Amino acid sequence: MTDIEELVRRVAAKARATSTPLPPTATAEEISEAEAALGFALPPLLASLYREVANGGYGPDYQLLPLTGEGRTVLSEYRSERSASAEDETPYWPADVLPILDWGCGMYAAVDCRSETATVLLFDPNPMADDGAEAWFLDAESLTEWLETWLAETGWYREDAYEDENVAYPEPWDMATSRIAE
Figure 1 (cartoon, rainbow, N blue to C red):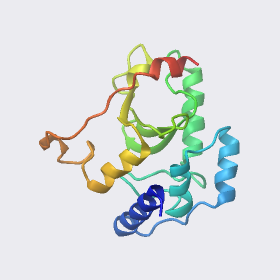
Figure 2: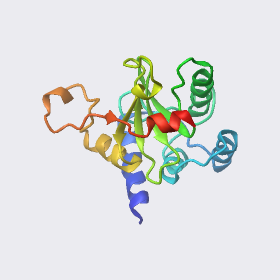
Figure 3: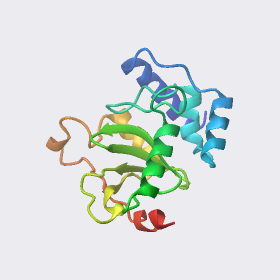
Figure 4: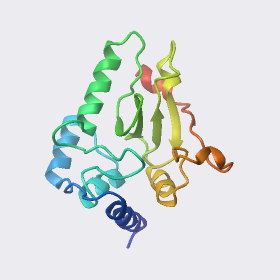
């Protein structure tokens, strides 16, 4: 069993234990159609989560958005944010950065699909003033790391995280300005 297979197995076990009932998984065809609509591939681990665990509905606090389907999805939120960003005086949403979880208050967990490790970013528009880059923070160097944090229940988003001096809080994303400018 590879490291990714083992991680997906552990995520599936926690998802089943904490988020019942889970929606069905996304099919390989649905993932291919989503990638075609996006114009880029999902990182392999993210595709595995949708194909092998469930089409959203589990994960930290507010849970992963479904990739496709009715209502709010990864695909619809990406299109909406990219469109709004292009029309805004202050562009803020870079290409190939997928919102995967809505934290509320306009905040998202997002995956950089250009990153080899599927870097996880925090989008928080609340501090944004004159520069869309001010809204982007590095949450985890990889989707693997982000998931491990959720599995270990050590994320910054935990209700009691402020009491834990070892919690790593998101830092500004260094690549935000250049990626938004593309």
